[in-house]
Image (cartoon, rainbow, N blue to C red; front, top):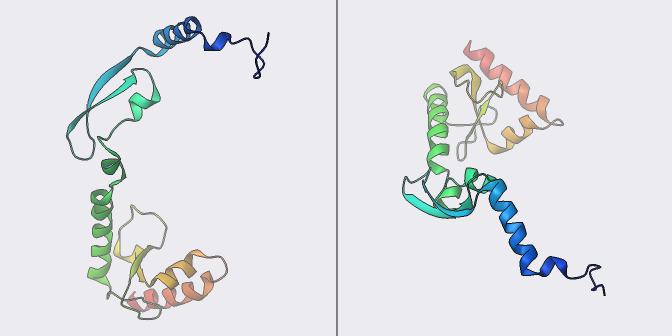
Length: 151
């Protein structure tokens, strides 16, 4: 007699489940407790996984908090190019002069190129306009005029 799901209940027997677990153990190793060092905080932590699986490879952090916290990485990058930019330009938008919130735009879109001539201080509005297709020309003219006056 078939069940509602269309099979004879074979997949719910302990014998079948044990056979599947044995196959998983052969292919990926048994479920074991492993110890790693957290990539963020450096603390040692343990977790359960099979050795030859993505879960084992991708487990890098001791907690969700450490996994989500990228502030050190971001600040290190942001401070570097922002500092270079504001050492060479006033901390204001070069298009409109707004000085409350100032973002830094990489002219060549290469975030590794932190040369002063590649870094442009812009207010959030002009920065978004620069990245849009519709308003790009309005901002580009102001930037070219400003940079032309420096050279």
